Image (cartoon, rainbow, N blue to C red; front, side, top):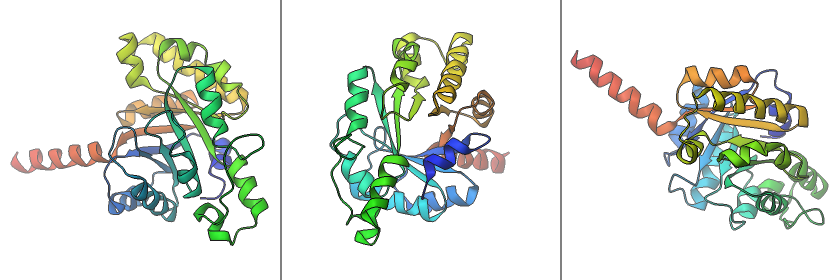
Length: 251
């Protein structure tokens, strides 16, 4: 999708997405028919290999959705190939230091400002049919470079991460925040912290993201002003719908 970052930044209300855990084109197609604005293909908590990610990105974009990818870790190994595969951006999990955030997002930006190499004969460059200048401009200006802050100390320093030159999104990992702090997303202090991060990101001119387990929780984050809000994931949505159908049919 051309200009997903601009679309997300300019939306009057946050965009709605979900995680892709199931390795299926049909599932992604159904998510598009359902009306989701974007998906995040999860390489951290789902066993998606690189070639499948490439095809799921294509499927999502052909359904009119933004296609982001959550990296498996904080290394730079997959960055070049996923971006040249045409993904609209990347989420970096479990970032805890300024230096980590600086280096991984520099890998998403072309030299000399960053360390990403030229690959204009890839899908992102329309196999060489896209002018190199457009390929470079899109890669640097329209790529979502979102870091996930998932512990209390890092979230308290969210403004420092947001000030880095190549970070253009902050995502709150409420699940790991609960593991490290013992405070669920519904805790009043966590709610206040989340709202503060959304407001800070908006003031800084970058994106903000959060994941919700239910539509009701997703509306809370949309009302807070988050740019990208995830609700559940494809596997859980299917599982709960299937379990509900069985329970209803059996009375």
